[in-house]
Length: 314
Ligand SMILES: Cc1cc2nc3c(=O)[nH]c(=O)nc-3n(C[C@H](O)[C@H](O)[C@H](O)COP(=O)(O)OP(=O)(O)OC[C@H]3O[C@@H](n4cnc5c(N)ncnc54)[C@H](O)[C@@H]3O)c2cc1C
Image (cartoon, rainbow, N blue to C red):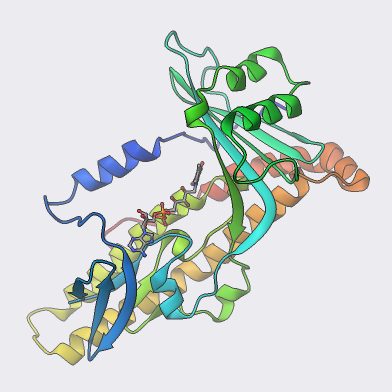
């Protein structure tokens, strides 16, 4: 199925490395400390003592924000459970075309027979593709050559220019991972923020990749968190009162948690539902999907990304 072009919405493919470098380059040199694995968090009055695997202990002065991914140590400290594993596996790859791929800016998506796949140009010379499935033929230890063969077999009925994308993919760009998500109801009563600690990104809302919003919503978190903290710090003014500062930060984080809770629940639930319907093998569900839901689901994918999280400064 060709993904519908929409006048209202658009999707853009951004390479993770490029995005990370752009964000890191905005920070003063030395702000980021690499290879620092957090293993334990300890309370010490208004402060948190963050223990690293090499024995170093860092003392948080203002706030501790856990952006430490799906296995978040900070999330565990706040009381979150481990994300739930689904029976679905995602295969992803990148294909380089030195002479240009010729797909323009179109995003192609296909689904049916328990498989969902997509092909998205990143730039003039690169196409990113993915395939999700529930097959038990593969597991996380399968080598890239067999994964590629599996994908080509699943996509054999698609047009040749699409299967060629997979055929010409470098084996070392192929990755496969089991999909995980946080059951949305867990967020109803969870502590997204407590004291001067909070979580953001996958640590807060790991979701299945069906609407491509995991990384995008992590950036939404970042903007809203920065705004809430900025307001709290600005309100502090010249006051040196530690208890008052702490209270303001705590309130800023509470505001952030309130703003992100329902958005997180919405995204996790939508992603799971879209994936469930698009990858279904059931006869009736397939009929319903192909006859009535396909354009709605494709539109939903674009619509959910159209979220205004406001500006950094209020
Ligand atoms: C192959 C792939 C394709 C994806 N495609 C899309 C897409 O198309 N669109 C989209 O929006 N999202 C996509 N996602 C999801 C997106 O990448 C994630 O949602 C996003 O990276 C979450 O960002 P994060 O910073 O919260 O977590 P992560 O990117 O997981 O970063 C967590 C960081 O914390 C570090 N860390 C982990 N544990 C510790 C610890 N104990 N101590 C210190 N540091 C720690 C890790 O080393 C890492 O640097 C994709 C994910 C994958 C894997």
